[in-house]
Image (tube, rainbow, N blue to C red; front, side, top):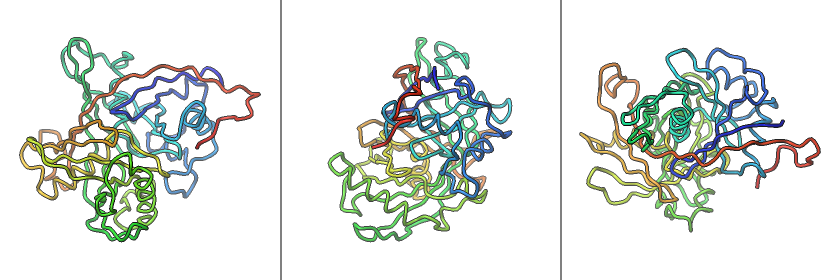
Length: 351
């Protein structure tokens, strides 16, 4: 593997590495949709995270593992969309495999599509970038002013609450988790119920708690998606602090622990959608109220439930809540990676 070109962004602090696998010399993945291409990367009968030993997965490991990446790296393969209604498709990946949804990655892709010229953007007006992801079609609305991108709003697939106050036994004691699907299943637990706070001082304990909660909920009925195992299971555990409401609505700080102990540096885009579904069900997002969602690194997303509009699925449609999450995505660099055939580390390692 030589000449592997990537473009890197961060969205509210969480990295996203963008690569075209065909340009990297790999054959196109089989399948007519993004979901089918993701399935082609996974072991038969797997849980949706175990990758096959394929050239694509070798490329994933090369880009996510040290010394070219790190255990917190995230990225995506740009692939064809399901049809001409979208601008591009993407297969999201992290250190342990392939996810069904990624809000921060969608926001980064929206900015990249405009920056790269894939989608023509006006200097002073919003432009929509439609992206097919394994969980469905999502939209990144790129906000422009003076020829610059000033922010991105991610509209997710409909989110819905799947479980309330599910008891979970942990080494911190028994807690209750609320579950919501927002392209992937997230379990929300108040950090104070674990005797913790969402801050860097408690990060090792928060990661431990997140891993324990995810393992304890494996196979729970509230984590099963009607479309099958590739969309089922707890993807992330959102540990949150309730802060004083702001003038526009709730304010929470969170850390999302996903995959095998990976930490989201941003407030988590799809996880914010899951929190919005839970808050809306509690009656806390009435009218124009919105969630100020803060990450453990001090970055912010704002999220809101979208009222019914022409052509939208709405909260009244019985198919979940349409949500929008707004943040900022910035390019951090471009890279040209190689794998020296004499390099005994190969695709690298994780610590």
